[in-house]
Image (tube, rainbow, N blue to C red):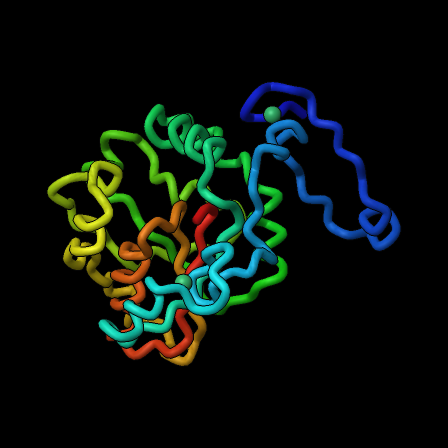
Length: 226
Ligand SMILES: [Zn+2]
Ligand SMILES: [Zn+2]
């Protein structure tokens, strides 16, 4: 198999437990050289709320969310947003290379096997983005791994998140609406909301708010990068 990012051959070294315990073999689409440019977030003194690395306790952003909106963040992410992730999303989102959706398949799949939720939903693209790009990047990133339910729609914003500065992002008003399907879900079920990148936390906070107001008690969020 070839690395989706650089085209190098991937040598799949089967782990002993995969051979002897008949463990499901999860295919890998990223080579070791590309993988070495990633900065995994796990075990780095993360903020227990938003998973920010080297936070030494609850970070200032999460304290602010809690004070201002009484929202307790429950977020996890896999990789720090660095140059490699930046280039990845440029290829995937800006140039619309939909095949790149699978680059992190193994990492996301492994995480999904360690963390269980009753219902999994995602941050949808707005209609105009979907039409321009031809696919929904968050949906494609996770669709092969989770049984995704679309429960939100995104209203078109004045300008894309990527063009906003930090202050503008933090003050963006609610951009999601609940779909009728949300009413069919039992409120005591645990909900996982997926996004691709966590920057200020505002996007997931808005999505979180929809479920919070609908009386869901167990709301969790996840992003590939943070
Ligand atoms: Zn590679
Ligand atoms: Zn935090």
